[in-house]
Length: 93
Image (cartoon, rainbow, N blue to C red; front, side):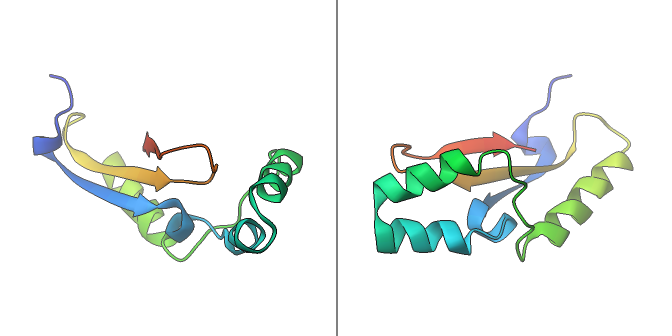
């Protein structure tokens, strides 16, 4: 049976809660879109530090390992506007 949202707890979380993006936000607000895009390009290989919600998401995803069913469990939807040309981007974990 395929996964269905009715079978799971689905949580939407902002990327700024999941990851520490203070510097990126400051650059976008203070220096503008071009500086933000350049910063993103020059740091695209850097790991992003965990944000305040990271431990919660880790714990929820670990619970899935103990789920009896592969079609139920927790799903985390990451909502992001980290690129100024993106309306929004979603990733399901």
